[in-house]
Length: 341
Image 1 (cartoon, rainbow, N blue to C red):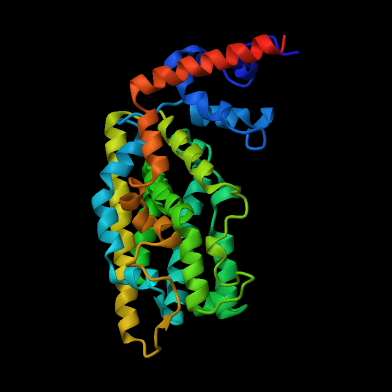
Image 2 (spheres, helix red, strand yellow; image 1 turned 90 degrees about the vertical axis):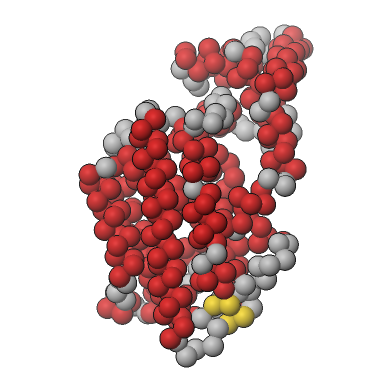
């Protein structure tokens, strides 16, 4: 028989500081998304610590996730306008170029994940260490075996632009590990945002098997809900104990990561112009803004503001709305407790 309030029920899963936040009406307003779920959608009690981690932290302009979003917009726009990205999104892909892009990703993620493993216990990065969910190296090995065969290691080499990127990642991991946050955020959040779209474009354009050989890089078997995982990842970033200067350095490093990626894109585009192979053309058109293409990481920021869900979230962040929601939640929780006595 339930004889406790909502916060008392979940209190066993959080510390005293979080309990006090939950009792605060302003923060309680952010718990409405749990109570609003249908019984089928509602998390099991064992999953509530994760939901609380997402719900108990109100978004602030000084949060690292917000600073990164605002601070990398210009770089984001420039990246989406590289010729390689535009051609990819239109489905105009040369198979040899796609193979070389996969090679570049292999060297990039090998370096990134080596440094993440090195810093898995470092408090400036440890909360963002999700090897089971995020690591891409083994998936890329499968893709390279598909394209190049069992002797793939002898058939590939790191390009000049990719090597510059790799060198920077190793420097950061060994000397400025807090900046690994920028590289992990730039890569993995983009992969989760638009991976399914890019996977479908490549699969259709290159006529790859429906069993997903050659595109394992885009398959996150251990992330059941990409949107919820990204929210959790951002909450973990925002909870890192970082001063203002360190946050600014992370944003600067994220812009640097974008520049490295653009240099790799430009290098691939130059290589593509020298290939005699005709570009495959079976992907989704990029210019009409319809369908799943809007989920691509290079389009999501621009189109996201028009989404009704984003508008609802923005509205929910208003103080007056939070106060009203908090009151409703408090009444609902009290009624539930009384009813079940």
